[in-house]
Length: 616
Image (cartoon, rainbow, N blue to C red; front, side):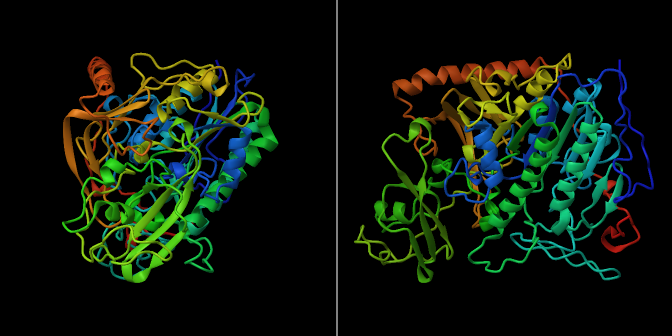
C-alpha cells in the first residue's frame, strides 16, 4: 500500500524558496485513479446575506455568484457551532463538540487543542493516498502535536488562530480600532479592549514562523499564491489532493489592502468581501485550468457575522432573530406602532414609498431594502425590510421622515431596549445559517438551489465517501453522507439538527436548540453582545419556544403553546433531544485540555518587544 510522508525541517524553511519543502509529491504505490481532488474553502464570520446569490442587496461576490450558477447553492446549510474553534473541529471530525470535546475557542496560550484521539479528515485522506494541504486559520491548537502538520496535513501555511489575536504593523479596520505593534525598542502600551499588544501575530509555513508580525495587507495575496502553487504541484504529481483553505475573511480586522477613496460611500466590509471573492476566484480559476473535471469544490462559512463589530459585520439576510431583538419595548408614552417603525434592528415591512432616511438629529439611520423571494415563507409578493441603526441610543425623534404622513404620536424620549445580537455566538439562525456552494463540473448539477437541511458536519462523511475511503471506527458521527444531494439524486438531508450553545447563553456545547424538519425549538435563549454593547439576558424555557421556519424565517413569533401544531411538535422535539444525549453518553467521547501557559505563545524572537522578527 502506498504511503506519503512528512519530512520535518525544524529550521531553514524559506518563505520564498523551493515550493513545499516538506511534501513528497512523488507517486508511491497506488495512484489517483478516478478519486476526486477535494478543495474546501471556509470563510470566517461570513453572514448568509453576504453572498449575492442569497441576498440581492449584496453586490460584492461576483466569483462566488458565478460558482453558484455553475454549481449547487444550499439555502438551509448550517455551521456546526456559532463560534470558531468548535465549528472547525466539527468540520474536520464530523462530530459535535460534545463528542470531540471542542466546545469553545482556544487561546494564544492554550496548551491543548483538538484531542489527538480524534481522527481528522486530513488524516483519513492522507492514509488513503491523498496529498493534503492547509492554508489559513487553524485555531485548533498550535502547541506541539496539535499543530496542523501533525494532524494529517502534509503542508501548512497560515496563522494558528484568529488574526485579531495578535498585533500587526497593518492593523486594518476593527471596532474598536486596535493600534499597531509597538516599534522595536519601544515600551509595551496598555491594552485596549479586545486588543493584543504584547505579542505579534505569527505566520507559519509548516513548523516555522516565517513572519511576525503578519502583514495583513498582503495576507490574501500570499494565501492565493500558496493555494495556486499547491494545486499545481499536486495536480502534476497525478495523486489526488485535499486542500483546506480557512480564510481570514470576513473576521475583523478587515485588511486595509488599499485606502478607500470614499470611506463613507465604500464600506471597508464591502471592500473585504470583494477581496475575499477575488481570492476564491483565483483558486477556482486554477482548479478549472488544471483539474476541472476531477475536483470537487465546497465553499461555506464557520458561523454567522459578528454583530458587535457594527459596520464591520456582515448580513444575516432575513434570519434576524426578531424574538430576541424585539423582546423588550420602550418605556411608557410611545405608541406601539411608532416604536415598531423606528426599531433599531431589522424589521419586516411592506412597500414603503421612501428608500432612505438619515436625519442626524434623530440619532437614527434607516434604509429600506427588498427581500428577494425565499422559499415558502415569501408567498404574498415582494417584501421589504427596514434596516436601522441607532447612532444616539437614548435620543429619538418627534418628527416623521420626509414625505411621510403621521403614523402616530412619538415621544421625544424612550428607553432603549436591551436585547443583544442574534448572530454569531447565538443559536438563532443568524448565528449558524451560513452560505454554502458546491462545484464539480459534470457531476454536481449546474445552477441548482437545494433546500436540503445540511451542515458543516456533513463535510467529513461526504468527502470520505467521495474519496472512496472509510470512516474511522469506534465512534459515532453527527454528519451524514450528502453525496446523493450533491450529485442531484436526492433532496433528502437531515431530519434533525442540533445547535450547540456557543457563548451567548447556557453551558458551552450543550444542546438546547433543536431543528426538527421545518421547526426549531429553543430550551434556552440569549443575545450576544450587539453593536451598542447590549447583551441579551439568558432565558430558560421549560416549555420551549418553537418556531415554524417555513412561515417565520425571522424567528419572530413562536407557536402558541396551546395550539395543536405546538402540541404535535413538542413530544417529537423532546424525544430527539433525549435520543441524542443518550447516544453521546454511550459514545467514545474526547476530553480537551483547555489549560493555558504563556510559555507556549508562538514567538520567533522572545528577546524582542512583541516577538518581532524579520521575514526569513
